[in-house]
Image (tube, rainbow over the protein chains, first blue to last red):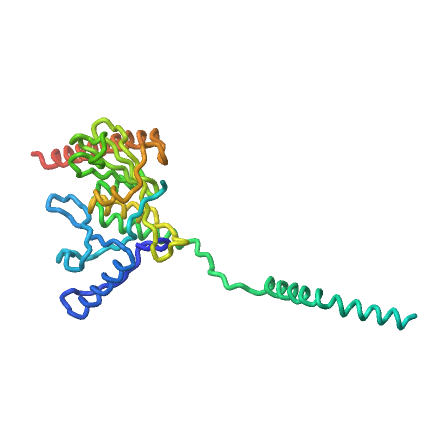
Length: 78
Length: 209
């Protein structure tokens, strides 16, 4: 998610392919370095939906098809 | 006599030129700057609308059907709290184990409330600024702001609440409005239940012998 633009595709690829995986890892690291949070939407067996915040590429569930980056939360008006 | 006047005029001009020439030069530069064409980014009136449409599609793909319908129909999403003692464990007004939830509005503080009594607990003011543009960050589209809050709340509620600036209810969101929204939500849920019950009865009668 990019302020002023909404959803922007950063990178896509197949983690089964080594070259794609490296590229995705690099994109993931770069987003986190820029201060973004990474979240993976997950659906529990009962159908309940929630997000998992991940801070390392290895923590991304293997069955997920996307990672959403959004600006890090900050305290609003005091 | 004439010669004397001409000489005097020349002397006066020579003396004033030190003052006048820089001023005239400055005026000329200003005139040129005013007339110069400044390249401007053409305003795209559809950009924000397209961004919001994409954001709505993304939100819809992440939350469940009930939450999406809630946002579409009411303009906010309710997220149930998962902390045993409420959002503020250390506070005296901890919920004591009672169920609580949050109302998530676009670009407004998150409002915590008790599920049973609808008593408002706190407002949590949180933003998602663009760190790469600290002096002129545009806002996330409305639906992206809701999704970011939803992801942060369901992903790590404690972290988000610790990050937010907490206020008593009424600081930014009118408590009467929140109460009305909670009432609208209860009415909306009843209507959905009735509709679901009606559909179930209909399908039962369809399959009955």
